[in-house]
Length: 212
Image: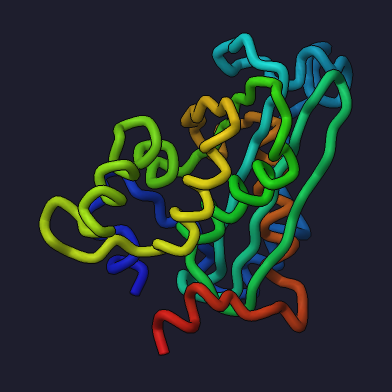
């Protein structure tokens, strides 16, 4: 199923834990960047250090993943606006890595809908960023949600919502390498993993309904 979810997408990411036990062990001993004078725990202006600077009013970092792919999944986002930060997170009982990467971006953009400010959104999902920046999404929509090889586009429910959110919002998508020590990316990852291991998670109707 995991291979099916990313077939046809170069550079798609498989980010999941083989077992729930490994996910829980990571949470007990998470990897953090060593604090320095310029680390994200010190000055707010340095929290995005190491990322190409953009002239955007709002900065968003997102991440998502699941255990076993498909499996219990979660997403996390951090929105930075004028020195203030807001965290968003959630999870589902059965979903995929790609859906959680997309959901993280969607939930963050929902929070910003109607804002006039420009937005820079950073994600470590090549699937998400390339679909936007390389024009795949517009082509899929124009082709009746078919890929170039004739296959069906997956996660159409989320792509449609993302398109609606982008209609009246100025968003620039940027790819950032995951698990490479970027503080905000690591923070989103931790939010996603924490959400994925919660009990009594809701149903991802867009996934379970499509696979039943």
